[in-house]
Image (cartoon, rainbow, N blue to C red; front, side):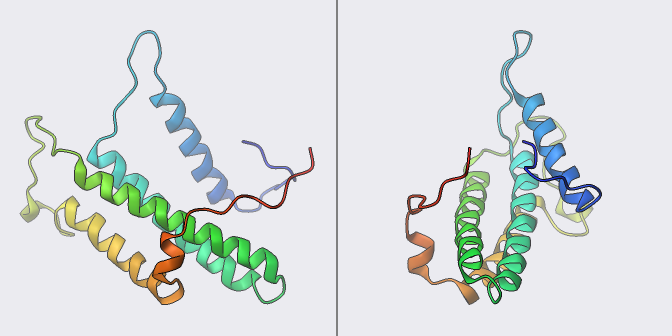
Length: 154
C-alpha cells in the first residue's frame, strides 16, 4: 500500500512497521517450491503484540482528534473498537493452536524472566482489555461493523 500524500520523514517507525508486515505477508505466501506457512503460537503472539500497540495508537489518536474534529474522532473510535475485536480473535486463536510438538519447544518458565509465553500474551491482552472497558461498552464491542457511509474519491 502506498500513501495518498507524501510523508517525507514523518513517522518513520510506523512506516517501517508497515513495511515489515508487508514483507512478512509476502514471505508467507505460497509458492511453487513451498506450501503456505501455517500460523503457530509464536506467530500469533507477535501479531497480537503488534495489534495491541496499534490499538493503543488508535486510542490516543481518537482522543486527540475528537475535540477539534468530532466526526473524524468518532471514526477513529470505531476503528479502535474493531481493532480490539480483531485483537481478541487473535488472542483466542493463539489458545486454540496446539503447543508445538517439536523437540526443544517445551515451555520452561524458569528460563524466562517474564514468564512463559502463554502468560505474556494473556497479560498483554488483559492490560489492553482493561483500557478498552474504560472507554467502550459491551454492546459496542459485540455490535457488527456498520456499512460504510463515505466513499473515497477515485
